[in-house]
Length: 200
Image 1 (cartoon, one colour):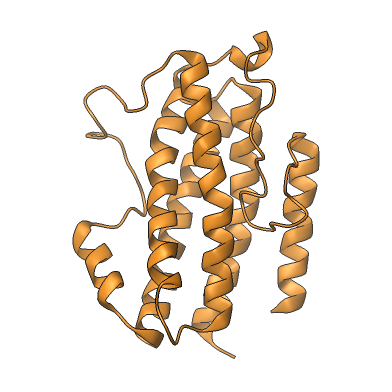
Image 2: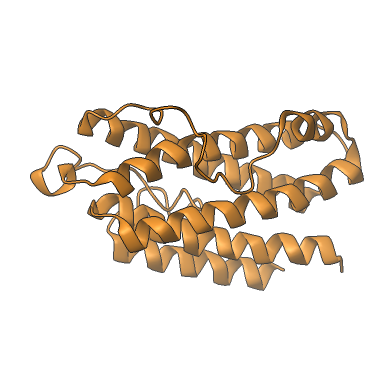
């Protein structure tokens, strides 16, 4: 597992360096050490955006926020596998700064934080229902760890699909770079979670 983690971290670092946004990448191998925010959000190039960029940010923000919430639930429990605790910490430390980055983009672009008419009609793959969140919050030890890994795997798969759509259809270079980093980091974490679920 350790060898795999170091390889995935190297993969993310490579994507980050290519994307030109490496703040914190060395200390955070997860998706967010991948973003580091956009220091040039006010430049003409970075201000250019299309509907796909706006939708990406508007949908990925609540998606990331739920991942942070799920991670917090696990981190508050006792008796959780240390490897799962480490993963939850990395996911939280990664995605919380990305929420701030994307919020800043929407503000700089003069776009609303939420989509007109809400999320109805738009796929938010992997999002947990309130019942599922309540079940995760009430679960303990091994059951909580297993539930976290299973639901976070599906959650990550949804984020990867959304990010790939941005890569294909987006215009803003910073948003596309973040989407590429999300795909690389979260695909690596999906494999990590599947390995943890499979056991030794």
